Length: 227
Image (tube, rainbow, N blue to C red; front, side, top):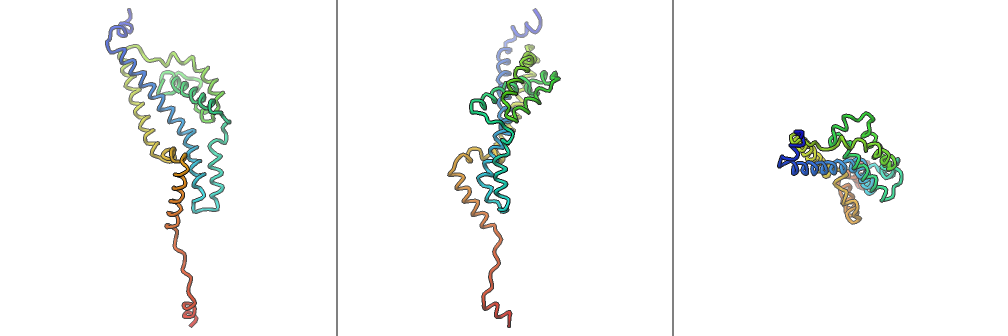
């Protein structure tokens, strides 16, 4: 019996540690997938919704219309039109590819990747190319074995701690993003009443911040200057 097999069978903490490592990996994959979705898809969409709703309130009214049109079309200019089911499938495929190829999730796979598969995955996901993602998933299946968790108890502990640290970092990044524009507005922008109230408030702020208009001189003042 090899030392690795003996450790796996006899060490009382192996099963619990293996499950904990799997949970940390799933948590890391989930956080990284959400972060990619926010940065590549939802973030530009929310920004476009914001400028479409409030762009006309900018002081430079001459360019407001052009800015609103550009903001509304730019995020999906190069995207194919995906049905909701196709969009969900693309996200599911991307998450599977992330679990198999991402350098943080599977560093051994990333180090051995001579084809640059992960870069191709990111490009396809940013473009919303579901067909390309399916093709890359087939090419990445051979990498699944290299992405397995180690059996050795010492190596498994190190991998668990590494995944835990990276998952915590990803969660912190998401928490920070959620407080920044446009991610902090993702719920409000879907509420017409909030948009209406916000527009009213912004109009009032703009009116209060506007420089005072020069006071027109009265007829009496004009006569004094003539004299």
